[in-house]
Length: 224
Image (cartoon, rainbow, N blue to C red; front, side, top):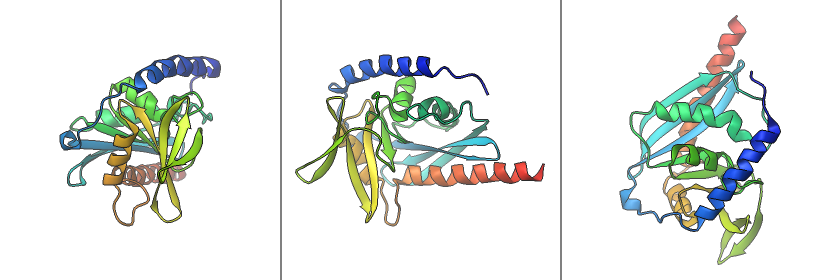
């Protein structure tokens, strides 16, 4: 495991977030009829390995088309606020193994609702130049307020996220990642929510595959 420079990582986030916040007001609107492919990425751990999986879904029919996993040793320990440096590389590797490029990527984590406005969803969007949406199960940063019945999250002077409750008692924190407006991010997430699921379909599947892959790594480590 390589040495990790915490201060350098924070400085990088601060520099990149300034660019993203300047661009946020001009992120393009989304035409749902032009969205064909959506990917979801998630990671799990077991047996000393990190399993990052990407699932490709047809947006119109919510049909799984492909999935890939990339397994590696975690590059750094978990550091609060710097999850992207731990998990973005394995997500990008998995995404690049998919047979086609997605139009939008859903990421297990936050986007602009991050202390430095550069959560893992934003980080991945910047690296790949793709629209990304953060979908997290817990809050991280920002002020919640209710406007016309919507539970919005304001962060860094931007309406950056919205809290959804797809299943009673289950909250999802949807946030702008990169190159997408909040209203469009919420539309995409809602469209991909299916009965009985606590996550939008691509993330539900990525969560399942990553856990299964990590479990195999754990079993293999026990047999050594």
